[in-house]
Structures are given as structure tokens and as C-alpha cells.
Length: 116
Image 1: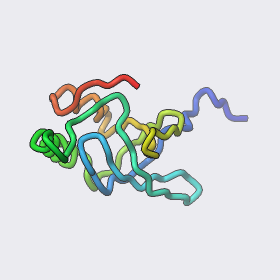
Image 2: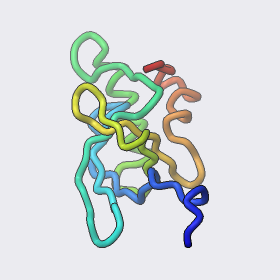
Image 3: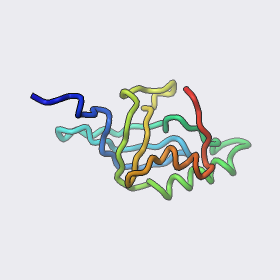
């Protein structure tokens, strides 16, 4: 019998195919058993400037930084209990090469922490 305490059902291999802005991406998620889903993900615990309106210049900087880090890369997506936010996006944390990308955005001043 498997010890379910050693298993984390909320971590997935994912391929980032689009970065809309500094805190929203589209990914192809490998759910196992040859099942793959294309989903939109809102990065958990952070907020970045919008790519439209008066925040546009800073928003584009955040988006482009994130694109440089993860676009077309394979990452680990940690979802928050497979929960969706108010706009229907899954809420998640992206890990690449052992680094928490959400935290990296904050550390490099492309995002601020956000409580939900």
C-alpha cells in the first residue's frame, strides 16, 4: 500500500506556452496517464503591474522578465489545492531548476507580495 503522506498530488510537470503578463501564464500540464490539459495559471501570492493602461511600461517589464525565465520551458507547477481564482484561472507556484519563480519575481522587484 502507498503512503499518501509521501505523495504530493498538487505538483505537475508543465510546459509554459504563453506568458500574458507578469502573473498570468498558459501551460500544458501533464496530469499523468497520458492526460494533458491546457490551463491558465495565476501566480500565487504576488501581483504585478498590468500590461494595459497606465501601468503598461512596468507591466511589460514584468512580463518580459517572466518570459525570459520560463517561456517554452518545462517547469514544476504547484497548484493550491487545484483551486481556481475569480477569473477562472488556476492558482499556482512555478518552480524551475529548484527556484520558486513567484518569489524570484518579488526579490527582483518585478512583483509585490499579495495576500488572498
